[in-house]
Length: 244
Image (tube, rainbow, N blue to C red; front, side, top):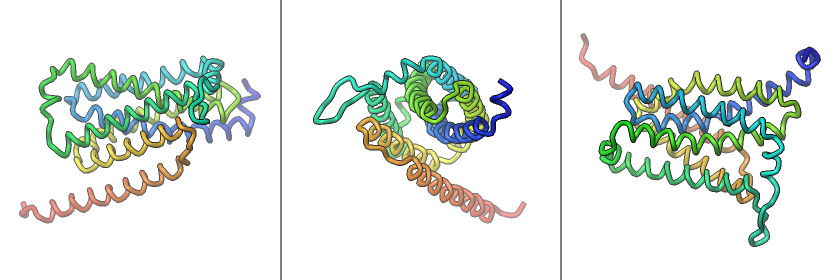
């Protein structure tokens, strides 16, 4: 253990992997923020806690199943010259789920049709949100842990990076959720991000890798533009108010 703590290579691997896990966790935080935005504040907070807690649990469970995970990358069948593994099928299914969910939410926002969520009881709406969070947590956890396996050899480094990344996700989820709930245009932008992420997951499943740097640069650039739009709207509303 002391040898690991005093090893510069181990610290470099930990920092690199933690940064990567935090970036990959952005997708998880965005999805949870969008899902809980229609719940009452108390239930939204509880749903965030459950979702992020499950994200950590799923990642640690998957880390303990390293041999099984490595087996998921082995081809199970071929079609038109493409060999598909279980990991590919899970990524394709998860990506399609993200695209369908984000498209449904965008339609609801554009049509201002919130009747579907109002007809559901509070308890059933909360349960449905948790089910969707579990599905997406599993997909993102699988992608995250397989990436970790490819970058680090020591499971202690992987566990430390995952725990740190989940802690950052937990701290940032509340502010992100409140910001998304308070700014409808930001929610629409977040939904567009989810469509983009879903397309990337499906492409990965078909073995066409889209470099994540392009996707996260687009997200960061759009988020920066939206941030300045929010500031501009806030300043305009202050100027328009009569002096107190």
